[in-house]
Amino acid sequence: MTKPFDVSKFRKEITKSIEGLSIGFNDPTDWVSTGNYTLNYLISGDFFKGVPMGKVTVFAGESGAGKSYICSGNLIRHAQEQGIYVVLIDTENALDEAWLHALGVNTGEDKLLKLNMAMIDDVAMTITKFVADYKTLPEDSRPKVLFVIDSLGMLLTPTDVNQFQAGDMKGDMGRKPKALTSLVRNCVNMFGNMNIGMVCTNHTYASQDMFDPDDKISGGQGFIYASSIVVAMRKLKLKEDEDGNKTGAQVMGIRASCKIMKTRYAKPFESVHVKIPYATGMSPYSGLFDMLEERGSLKREGNSYSYVTKEGEILKAMRKGWNNEMLDKAMADIMLRDLTAGVNTADTAITEDIEDVA
Image 1 (cartoon, rainbow, N blue to C red):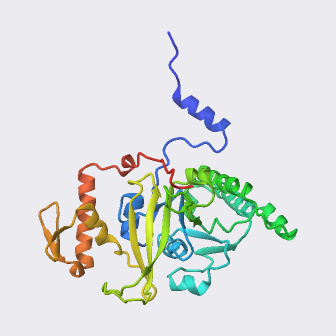
Image 2: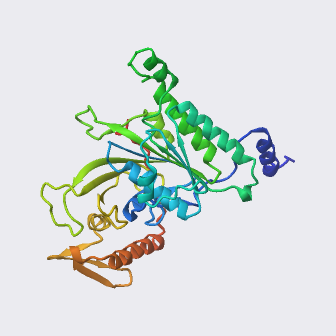
């Protein structure tokens, strides 16, 4: 008689023999809000989730597109509100304490560790050392930690530094993409079964392909493949006040165009325009009305827009009359419909083909 295969014995043997091996699923249990309900929904399939812990998320865009506002501001603030310790790696030497305070970030050492680094090798060494020490702690006493790197595009390689010192300004275009890919890959593997997450900002450059006009993300294709979530951002001028009235040539803030280039938790390639006024900052409801209209959830009737809930309640008002209370009801109804329909947003993310991101 053939001896049955002993799964428990096999699991015990490979766990002992392979260092760093984890068994089972590593589904995220903790999420950090971006500070915007629509962006949260497009990334995670939930208005109140956002960016997952245990994964690597990248926000890429041109200068002034709002990357640091969301990553070094909103994400850090919401992480701290959840008791998550934040390690902020500033590679641009641009994040001032007063600016972080204005965004609601607690810069106390018990809440935030800010590191100023310029070398990819130093960042890799720091994270590796941190994870090694982290593993020595008992599992039930390991804190939740979020790494924020702002930005990847400014990191240097030793070749960059050596060439600069020698007066050679060619740069290290060969090793840097490989180094960034290696950094992200190793972080993905290290963080998978731990309460550690990573959010990075990166730069984009204009496409030279007339058939593919989307901006390209620096760092190479391998770097994009290794990331779990990629959000491409573009900067548009905000020329209207809080009530939606046009202000002519006066620029009131940023209108950030956010396109979800890659996600494993919702449908990719969805977009939202998020308003970031200079005076008040981003509203969590910004872009929500437009998303509901684009989805067909809102029906236009003359000058009014109506939404019918699953229970038959009719929410109706003119565009400017749609207040936060009405939007809250619409969000709750959408989440209820998704749950009732058995929508698993992970199943909708069936494509990882991101050929239009380089």
